[in-house]
Image 1 (tube, rainbow, N blue to C red):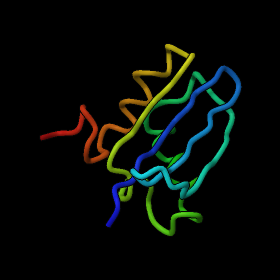
Image 2 (cartoon, helix red, strand yellow; image 1 turned 30 degrees about the horizontal axis):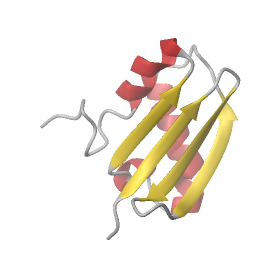
Image 3 (cartoon, rainbow, N blue to C red; image 1 turned 30 degrees about the vertical axis):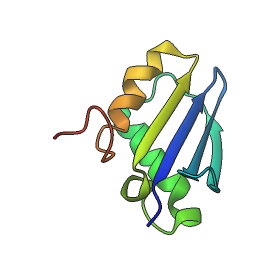
Length: 94
């Protein structure tokens, strides 16, 4: 099975999230409102729900890596924590 990456581009008003195969093939993409007050648990659940239909499974079961770009410093730690159990995440338990 091909490696999959979850890419997150967090802007001041909207976040674009996409799942791609490691070779660059587009799998799915979602756009949603950026909320600097969301918790890690809320972002984790939101991303799982948004990608459930197009992927047919949990984004967290599929994503091998997460790449994060943000202009909202307050969300960096929150989103890293939300993605923390992704298999290749630096904060995942080893």
